[in-house]
Image (cartoon, rainbow, N blue to C red; front, side, top):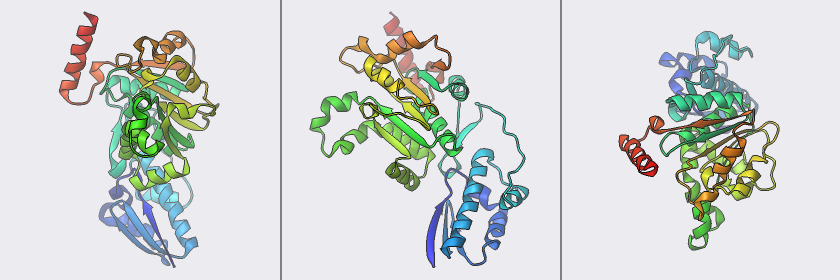
Length: 315
């Protein structure tokens, strides 16, 4: 007898179990040789390895269904058990839920430009999302990447940043290279922790399914079958950004996010993002979304702070 722990990733367990556990009871009845204990978003299974594998396949099929439709009826369950798929069309609505995060948290495109980013991501393989802090550029981009991964549209998620600050002070920080760079990449980890269970995310990072690394680590690679996000792109030089954009494989989806008012390079006039926006803006197949203070969804003061800085800059 073996034991296996299954995580209900990105779904509300109550939807899978059904009212008064009626759906769970039906699932359990299909596997009389297994001992199944369900608590919250974890299901612990004991029994024969082959039977557990069958049970695991069914649960993950149900999870995929819930991630797409956020609903599971008795009829849906019957069709999935039979190996079919419920006949339900899902409209391409970028204003709806992008992905269901941990504990069934609904992650949506909440503002006009977030919805525009979601729409353009569906239409183009390269999208630039430009705007001030707090507008949800990076968070929305990561949600779109997670959605593409969960829908099996891509095989990997690759998140990167130009480590300008870390590069300047790297030698003074304790630990190995990863430990030195991880604090700089922490905002990317934070977003992923909202959308993928911690243990599952750790496994993905270990096996390379999810990769989070400084921009310099992208050199020489071809990024294919992946949702790729370059964050804080205003801190990439022209050569770095060109290097990154030319890593794009045939089946890749790229999002570049940045704030051209917050350049940390020694020479603020040499931001590769500013240059790229100027020379690439007329190329078909890519899209540029300009976020502004209306998209800010942090504390109300953030919006006022951004407006004050913009006003002073204009003056």
